[in-house]
Image (cartoon, rainbow, N blue to C red; front, side, top):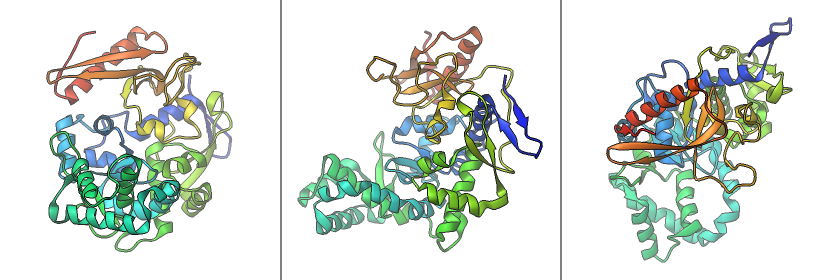
Length: 391
């Protein structure tokens, strides 16, 4: 049973179940969903997406009507959504209006994290030459695949494979030279940054202000994540804990602290927007979610991730890497969650006409949970416009 205990001064002390339920609502995983794919990405601020197609499912399942995979790909190709390295050294999907200020805020930190790898790029002269070649290759609306850019660099004697090539491309993304382009069949492409991203800094206006950018990111994070610690935001944003605390101080009366009670929530100092998602108790009906393995529901929280641990599966991990004690890492990348708690993993076999789901559960599902799983499996099949194979 979940609950919220008042302290007599207006503040509250939520238990673990309340924190989880509040987060599910804030993420858009409960209720009717946000109006569009763009609304979801804008609400979350950034969506981790190194697993590209599963990440589109994560966006679609938060959207009213659950848009199809084809519709999500079309939005991406049209430039309604863009994908680049930002916040941390991994890909994120963001809105075009947000990517410029997010990069200016977080790219310096990503560069510092990448610094040990940059000497492998061949030194400043080769790095500059590679950047110039990439910029010229994608100019004028010419969207290029990774293989095409690799061949171009190779023809000039520059790194074109392995880690050095990966970091050349990442550096060009961080420096706002290239960004995701339109899909070419199943292949992704790179495009010129300024041809896909509008001028200016979105919500900040025509000029960049680092403190305003920090406050905007922190405000958006708390609105879409519900309750989180200082370490949670620092880990997600790639920024320091010092900058996180400065941002919270700048928000002033817009934010408040609550202290978790009981179980994994015990003693956690959690921050929330005063006018943000209300503290929510668990619903009466069981709800199952089929979440992609790097869903924002997991990667948004570094410090308080154990709140996603299923109390009936105490030995099972709450987040990736999903490795059971004494076993190898599982090929089942994605997550089965019951009321926001991890109860197992899933993988899919997708053909032109059908979807088959395989699971590795940490405990047996109840009948209600089995029904909830089937509802979500059918929703996933509809997203891909195929039939669900019977188990």
